[in-house]
Image 1: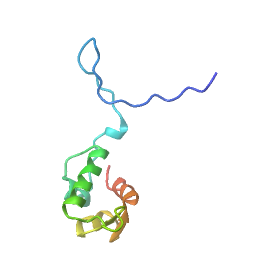
Image 2 (image 1 turned 60 degrees about the vertical axis):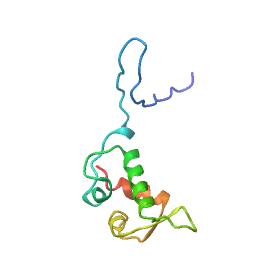
Image 3 (image 1 turned 135 degrees about the horizontal axis):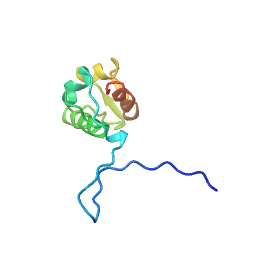
Image 4 (image 1 turned 90 degrees about the horizontal axis):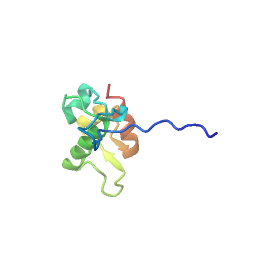
Length: 103
């Protein structure tokens, strides 16, 4: 008998019988941003994907993406506080830094 797979977490689902029932996912759990990250995304608890979206909005609004290498983010003062003082990080490295600022 093959080993059983763990169940995938789901978001709200509507059933034919009645109203939506809530199934929580740790990925969608609202997390509190640190003071440094709150300067960019706000101080309210947010799910991780929403934090990443707001950081990307900030990066695009302030034109902080390297035009020659779009995977590279050029940090301003607010982002340097989140990126441990680094002036440049890759988009993949960015997620590692964001995780350290969410509780």
